[in-house]
Amino acid sequence: IALNACAEASRLDLARELLSSMIAAKVPVRCLTFCILIKAYGRVGDVAKVARTYEAMGRQGVAPDLATYNALIDAYVRNGAMASAEDVLATMADAGVAPAPRSFNTLIKGYSRARRLRKAFDVVRRMRDVLGADADPHGLQPARRREAPLRPQLDAGDDRERRALVLRAE
Image (cartoon, rainbow, N blue to C red):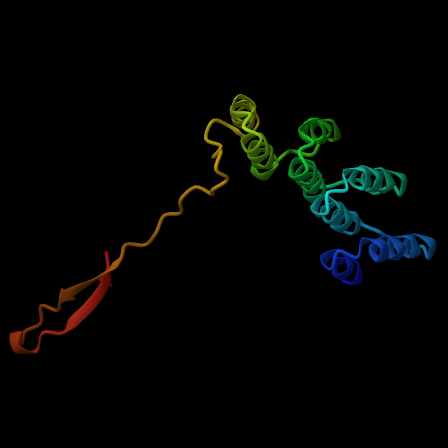
């Protein structure tokens, strides 16, 4: 919680000190710990510290998970480092971590913002190759079947004068 508070307040100097203290005190550090720092460094535009934090994660023997890889991709895309973001996607495959729609959508967003539409559409094609032909390039979940709207119907009772309004789902 303290690490995230430092990151949210853009006090990355304190966040880094806290991480160093945790490591020195042999407090177990997990993916989430590094993910918080990666996101924070990405938000402030410090791509070098994004990379160093990822490397430190490896030195600590912490294997990145999907959230960490997505945070890396986002940090690089946010700062226009598209080649590094692409490298992360390739590293995911090598590490056996399956990318999610968000992994691809973040790349699509980066290429679109950079007006590199051919690259963006290439990522859409790769996403469909990896996730299947029905993969949604917008990142939306398939529409869930909604219940039929409630409609008023008249109760066909014996007493026509006392018809009641009944709501029944079709």
